[in-house]
Amino acid sequence: MTWKWNKKDADLRQLNSKQTKIFSPREEVPLLQHRLEPEEHLDLSGSFFTGRIPESLGNCLGLKSLLLYMNTLEETIPVEFGNLGKLEVLDVSRNTLSGPLPAELGNCSSLSVLVLSNLYNVYEDIHSVRGESDLPPGADLTSMTEDFNFYQGGIPQEITRLPKLKILWVPRATLEGRFPGDWGSCQSLEMVNLGQNFLRGEIPVGLGKCKKLRLLDLSLNMLTGELLKEISVPCMSVFDVGGNSLSSLIPQVLSNTTTTAYHCPPLVHFESFSIESYNNNPSRPAPKAKMEHDFC
Image: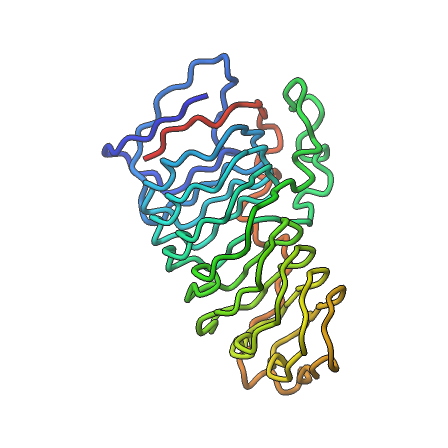
């Protein structure tokens, strides 16, 4: 399947693969000629795409959200994504990605939600929303309900320093190396899940500046050192550092009666991050196609 994007006069503000006819690999696909606008939201999740993520997506400078989760995409996250200065949401979880995380993502100054792996099943029962008849021959549902993103190396500090980052979600993704020590001002940071990896070192005192942090999961890593009282931020609701080699008492989290002065954000459920779901069009056919697109 080939989609080609050209900068013509048409105005496309949202493309959702669940609301667009998806052609089988043997069908001729018409040329899509659209211009990506700043309000663009590109949702290609759950579409049985295979192959590598096209570098040409980095030319879509107007993208605000890019959802590629629940496919079987391979190889690395393109460094060209660093060109997407307006990107706010990026979800590439539940694929088979590998390689190092590109430090170039630190150039995405508007990025607020970054989901690189996800142990939660967004669609608990995929049969209930697709149905057996809608599945392509030989479709592997395991790849749709498990996360096989296994990266090499750690989290670049260019990512943790992102000024608008609210959610960083990368559990059980074989991350290794030292735990990031530079989290910038982290004035927006609300949820960090780096659990079940191989990160080592100490939990930095800089996380104490993240006053809006509601969830911190660093469980089952190789962290050492003391838990400093500065980590006790006022908005914390979930704090999990089990399965490490940390010492000292767990910092006391302030009671909820004191959090209103800090304008703590409400605790969000992870499933609500998805912009769209299969329920928008459960009868859409789901061909298995290689992702060989020329975008923008």
